[in-house]
Image (cartoon, rainbow, N blue to C red):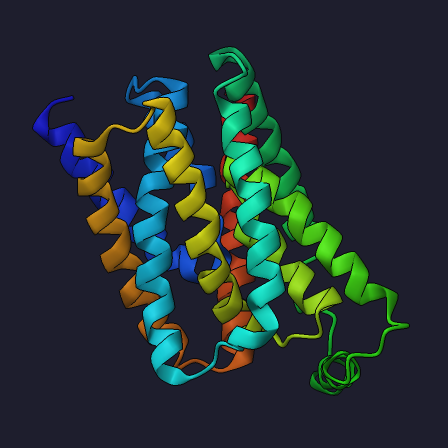
Length: 263
């Protein structure tokens, strides 16, 4: 890879990381982009995950400083995420490169459809969100949505360790719909959870010898900086503006997906 290609990758990873703090879908662009630069499919998945760990940490720090992360509530989610993500990362070593390309392409289509058909938080009023939050905060054992949240978070963690494209996007929707969190609260929570999802997956990929550390460190620094900048401004935005940014970015991602498959 020549210096111009590397600089282009750095810029694109930085920009997508800024947006990814809100949308969580930057891997839908970064991984296929690495394919275009001739990087081996498994190495691209693993190295991107290595960089995502830096991005997740950079995106979490401002939320921790703001005190918006409910650590006690997220503890069981983190436990499920560690187990699921490790399983997903192990699967990468067992499937062929061609299957990985097909998997990434299908994921791009499905995630784009999901975020267009069911945009996160678009149909929930503040009073409805608070009502769900209050009910789940009371630890009502009859609330089936609470159990469903655990199942979905574990299944999503497997996908998160396997590829991660759109993982945080769907996780954000899950936390809003089934864990009683507000949209802004779920954004903060997913950044924290993703530290463990990408972190444990990276450890497994390192064990499998799939991580390009030289490229990963460079891109990881760019992702850390982009996520920190994005999270810094996200914590100062209203819930309504977060939703607008999310939906606008999702729309652009959907167009990109359609363009890729048409041409």
